[in-house]
Length: 301
Ligand SMILES: Cc1cc2nc3c(=O)[nH]c(=O)nc-3n(C[C@H](O)[C@H](O)[C@H](O)COP(=O)(O)OP(=O)(O)OC[C@H]3O[C@@H](n4cnc5c(N)ncnc54)[C@H](O)[C@@H]3O)c2cc1C
Image (cartoon, rainbow, N blue to C red; front, side, top):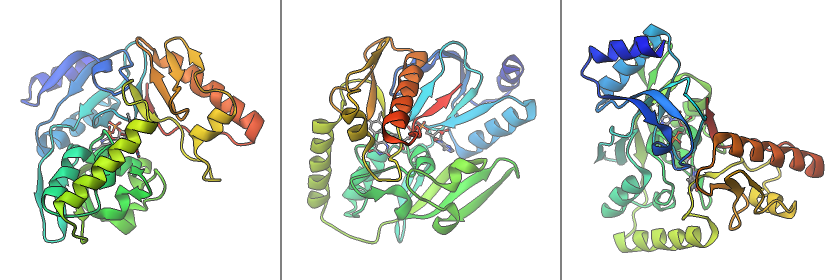
């Protein structure tokens, strides 16, 4: 099936790579080989790539910087469509308009340069705007969803481009309608009505970056927090640490010594190592604390 879709892409001008080591596509540096990675350079190419995958009937996933992903070992069953090259951004009357592949760091600095406040929290999240909107990424009490004015999406089933408002997207903790429906993020309009000096925004970013460096294992490959916060609101890192699981190792993956909410790749970890650790943690938490943690990181089989 993937061979068939590869033949179709040969007839187009859309850039693609074959037999790609997925360790190069995620911050976890884990995974096997993806037979086909499509790298559209504009929205039309992204839409066309999705149309072709649907026409041939191959499974596909649109990805950003892979900072919330765990790719399977062995040969991937998905075609990956990497949206990272769609990274245009421009100021608008109310804030910023940006394409899905724009990195959050670039977006945050673009806002700071224009003295628009509200995105400092996002500067240290190593993803794209598209991935952040899907996950409703957040940090230090702020979430990207609160800044959304509208998101332009490709509705995959209807094969049409449509604009959805913040209300329609139902953002909540690490969740949005973009997860539940077959929607691909093309771009978004962010409303940033509060102004602050560039110096003040950069100072806030520096302070948050310092807090991250002090509390998170940024020197080791990971996909950020492994689990969503439970209903009690208690940080999962604290729960895992209290159960004595900090430092627990499976193969070359380990619960971080620095932040028990992270699993880190010690070098050469496999997806199986990470999945085994996740299951071990879930069972322990369920037995000792009475709830089953829900993974935040997304597994791509
Ligand atoms: C060191 C570290 C720190 C982190 N800190 C935080 C944090 O503070 N807060 C936080 O919320 N997260 C954090 N994360 C997790 C991650 O960075 C965020 O979830 C980020 O928003 C994911 O963006 P991405 O572009 O990497 O998405 P990916 O990981 O590539 O994809 C994530 C999901 O979004 C989907 N997706 C991506 N782009 C699109 C698109 N254009 N259209 C439709 N679907 C799409 C993918 O299919 C996948 O389901 C951290 C990760 C790391 C490694």
